[in-house]
Image 1 (spheres, rainbow, N blue to C red):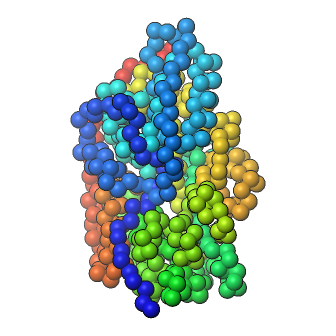
Image 2: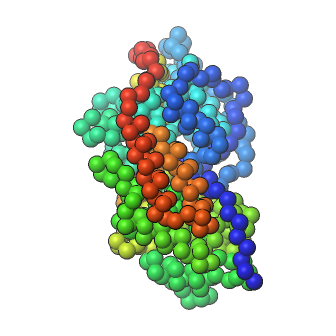
Image 3: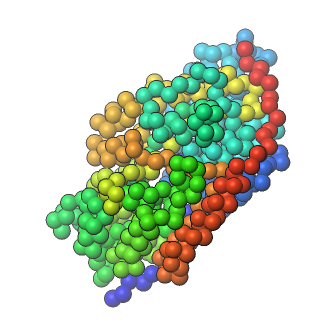
Length: 469
């Protein structure tokens, strides 16, 4: 019986993690005129978000928090805007309460599960929040648009952090001129997730190379059960480990596009060919939302996914026996992962920058991050805390082990257009409607155009005097 295929464009790139979707009532600020690229970004976020994590259940909106200190009664309140992250948000709320009381400050804290849709408009509005949570993917756009404030000299120093994670929140990219804006709070990575019972029954160990991955996928495919050996997505973030494994990259060290390369050709040929040979499938073909759901239902053998899959399986498929292994190495002998991270950043128009940076440093520190509820779906960015995380979640260790060499999920300003063009184009590649050489040529040209645009000067919002003591 032939496997019936129907493809749809993927929106599975969700680097920010557990950011849910709902507007906080009566808290949406009217935006000022935005740079053209930021309007594009807002539209892109509304239509097709940049992350790929499964949604968590809706949670009650975080209540309005207002703390007043007698010595600071006349000062404007410090406004903190965060994504709704369930138990993590509640724990952060209690820590902010204690910090504000000790600092004798007035703090307004709001959270939203429509966070990614609201963030840009709030930062560009007349009354932006002082401190927000920013993903590494969104950071270059906000920094280039002048919406974030660089930290004061020596205020935030990276300690016990992987260099690539810390560097993700510096701008501009020129090393001599780069300024640090914030420090990473948490990280998530991609690894190989597989059906433990299925591989054990077939006598297959977790594959360690592209060749063995294909061989295991062939063995795990069952046409009669409509089960594919490998579940993949027409999605840039899930294809990037294959590009890195072949020794390639999208943007070279000098800042130019490098997509037209033998490495990219080899990575795409492997990724597409296993699909066309009917040993790999996409989640949408079986009316599932993402690869985790496919594996949990027994319709897939292996996939490349992030550690957010662990709490998902625990909640939705508690009896499913899954395993996690390092990503298989490519022809260049590499198995670099992709890292999704975020930080607490300060608005460039904040009148309380010093207080906001102090709170950001406090919330990013080991005492707070190490005390937050953790279900395995995220890892602390700090090396020491991540080692403790591995001891708590030993079966998820490959996610943590991937952090030091992982490439941060981040593109230059304005590259949301590139991302969506890539994902839509991959659908056509899967369907054999276009060839890889033509696909890469078009994206190479698009990327070069976007890089030229990104290099043009951008207007920045007017600075607000820091009124903090």
